[in-house]
Image (cartoon, rainbow, N blue to C red; front, side, top):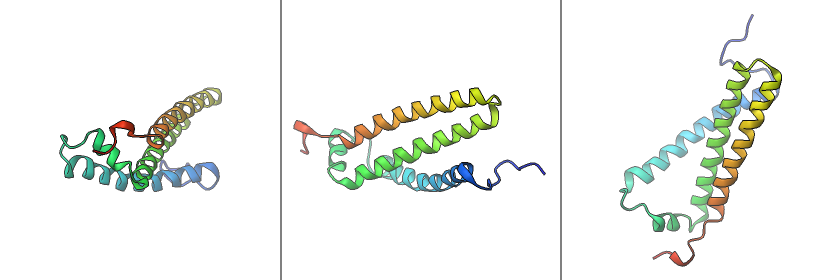
Length: 128
């Protein structure tokens, strides 16, 4: 009997990738909803500026929150792209090439976003 699309894999990397997609999707749902609530519902667009971000990033909680959301979103997206590649690219050589490309692009995005969040220093524009 052929495997049904969306059914759970038996074992190995595909099982962990399948499980990660479900768990990260649930986590991202809550993280993104809270982000939208705080950044777009509770605060007017005129309030969100450099000082707003500086005050948020003055505590480790918000940096951790944002970096967790970044990592989960990028890894969730990369895993989805990897799944699409596995489903539609039939040549194993081209699969390897495309998976390597998305991994490289994903690592660049993770590095850029992580550096921005971790090294953010308000400097002379400190909390006013």
